[in-house]
Image (cartoon, rainbow, N blue to C red):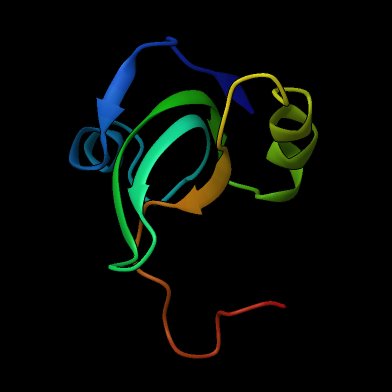
Length: 80
């Protein structure tokens, strides 16, 4: 897992900087009705979602947060 520069980035910038990685985002700007991510502050990124869970939880005071994948998720790749 890598920590990231803590500046606000658009979702397009996040996907470009961290292709096919999981990103932990804080201060998320999104439209939940449209399921659209506009921007956020990247707390960290990595190949595994699991390693970012603790980081996301420790950012409780940083507003809305999420862990998202920047690449395409293929058929059979979903885990619940």
